[in-house]
Image (tube, rainbow, N blue to C red; front, side):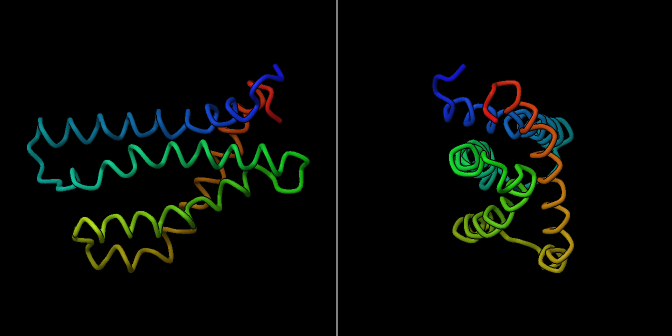
Length: 137
């Protein structure tokens, strides 16, 4: 299993957010079109659906390439990802002129640490188990 370790790291990284986003897209579609809920996120849904799994895969490749000697745990490395995703998400929403309610900004001091904790748990338990299964680290 020594062939293409970075490709296997990429595939292990994209597995978790891809499954999660498929569930989110299914719920969104069901609520939007069955119950006719006025949820205007069609313009910005492409960003998380296309970019987030790829960034998770690249983040796992970075960890596999540079931090496999135990200098930085996968959970800690993964919890840093929201610090990159939050500004990118805001930038995309701003460029697409998607209205962000003011109360979302007031929740940021709580939301960012909660996101970092959830990412830590996802990376520590889900992604690291996939890495171990694929023999990456």
